[in-house]
Image 1: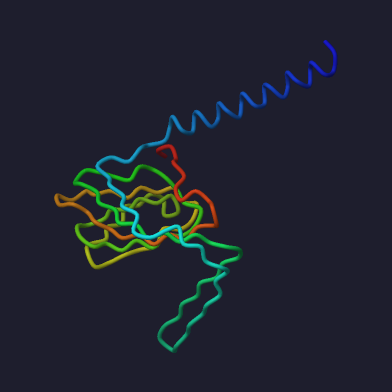
Image 2: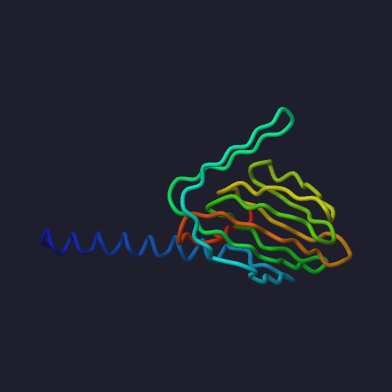
Length: 160
């Protein structure tokens, strides 16, 4: 076997292995159930953000490097439904409009946190998480996502 043939075989094996990893990741992903997403706005492209506000009783800071895409989405999850295990490449602000959201997050050891209507929380970037409706009425949330420009909004993940 000459060097060229060997190189082609090794390259083919690497490509096949990479395809197998992608296929396994997709096969292990957990799809949403009882979940409807309605895009309100986005993507909207934002330039770099550098804003800070401080008072004696309050402080806020948002900093980005490079362009960002912003999405605003209305999610409806029926009782017993969920959004499937996934992550995002940027932070998301979740506001609960009705029902009670139950949130499981890898960055918090998958401890369930419950958020009733009128409350909200932030999903950290790259943490695997699941948003569920463990109540007996529809859950409605409005989500603001800030992700790198042209990045995927959602990355499906296998159940932990």
